[in-house]
Amino acid sequence: MIAQPGSLLVVEDDGDVREFLAGDLRARGFQTETSGSCGDAIGRLREQSFDVVLCDVQLPDGDGLSVLRWCQQRPDPPVVILLTGYGSISSAVEAMRAGADDYLTKPILDDDLAESLSRAMARRIDGPHLQPAGVAAGAAGAAGAAGVAPGVGDELIGRDSRMEQLFELVETVAATRTTVLIQGESGTGKTLTARAIHERSDRRGRRFVEVSCGALSETLLESELFGHVAGAFTGAIAARPGRFRQADGGTLFLDEIDTASPAMQVRLLRAIQDREFEPVGGVCTERVDVRLIVATNNDLESMVREGSFREDLYYRINVVTLTQPPLRERRADIPLLVEAFRERFVEELGRRVGGVDEGAMEYLCEYHWPGNVRELVNVIERAVVLCRGELIRADDLPETLRREDSDVSDLPGNRLKSALADPERRMIVDSLEAYGWNRQQTARSLGINRTTLYKKMKRHGIIAPAH
Image (cartoon, rainbow, N blue to C red; front, side):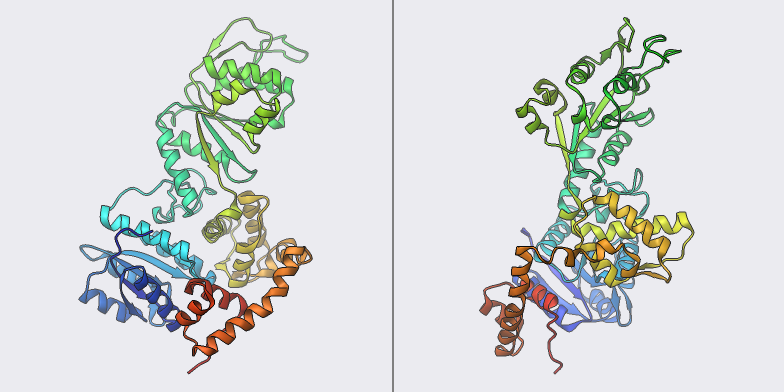
């Protein structure tokens, strides 16, 4: 909800979209003016001050960058939010680097619009402030407005509210030595979050040491973590320091901690609680100053109830918990991630690929991404390698991704959805014709809001007749 609506200028050359947005914003309490071109928008901005400018990236006499740059030169610049279709995501990212506050992808959804405007008005009321710090190297300038910040990695990029909450928690816990538990599915970027915490802490000048507990047997994991003395086992010719010792003064990240055996959990509990241990085969106790971050893709609380994970260890590591959302639950971030990875691989592979066309982007945004961000990285690298033109097209994407809809079309829920599609389309068209294609009256007659009607028209390919 937007607590304090203000004045707003909508810059959009599509008359239907402009009318839809203006009506919706006025209903929300905004004093709303409209414009259809760069020149007209700048003229209005000269004459009147606005709190927020919603500006399309592509306009008939230029682009949103022109309006953005003009706004930035004002003594009291408005907050600028860009509007973009899938095919112009690269332009949106470029504009955000130039200082835009946010972007919305068409068709614009109610929740996205409300959330973006809430942030915009908060910035307008409170004045400039630090954005939640995300992680972005591949999109190194792509901007605090998107919920990202330069410096540590590239997969932790996002403007989704859950990612912004994650960024804020990273900033909060980084300054402490508190143990952090990171939960999330495989491939969501838990390692990058751990690195972000380390890089923002006073330990950033010391080592960040990572151990994947699930990749090692119990014997090897014990030696890997705590080290061993010479002669501790066959082949142990010389003493070797463990990861706890290597991370002394820095941060130790234990991934897949849920795979640790009961015996290893006992040793970990003592090492975490007291920061002391004995190397394998040794009798001398070693003490270390280590900041511990652990991660899991399983439900540790359920494992505790089942007896497969120690309750005392769980409470010891579960001091602060960060949850990494799966990619399918933050689809609005997919275009930003796609653009960041495209730029990264274009540079690394020396390829000339200028963007992603609308058809390919729609596939990428609709796919369910079981492998999360890690899978998206691989898909974009493959697309950059195989791309034969200047834009990544649907044919450059894996066949399994492109045929996802047909693969699931026989499921009962999808058969029902398909069966209901035609009657729904006929009902919408009949209602639009009955009300002279007035969307507001049509939406009211159907018992839905205008945004929902707009989305349904888009999905069914319903286009208003030319007058």
